[in-house]
Length: 133
Image 1 (cartoon, one colour):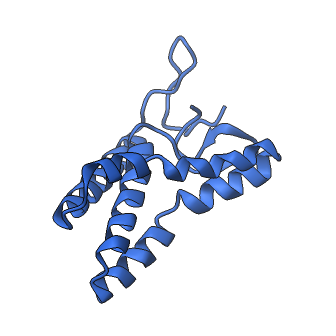
Image 2: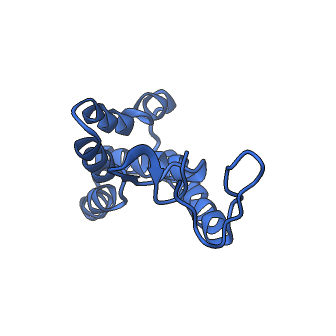
């Protein structure tokens, strides 16, 4: 089990949320809200937002190959880098479709992190940089 030294085990062996973990979750919630607001600002259809909100989770499919390949795939799709690059390029060209894609993608990452799902370690799907889920 991955525990931060500031975390304390409870009776059911789940760590209490530490201050850094709580701050990461608040930060993620801000990203989720920001992605939703950005999408709304572009006038996107909400059914599109809901349909594509869970598309990044398809990156977990390579876990059927092995833990290492699954973690690499999942982590590449669940880092802020790619959607931020897309967003910067889309904003500079005023491309609404790509702004919406980046907004949905960032909202997805924010949603995952707000509920405690983080980047994965190759030791197992449940071992994340935020906690063991």
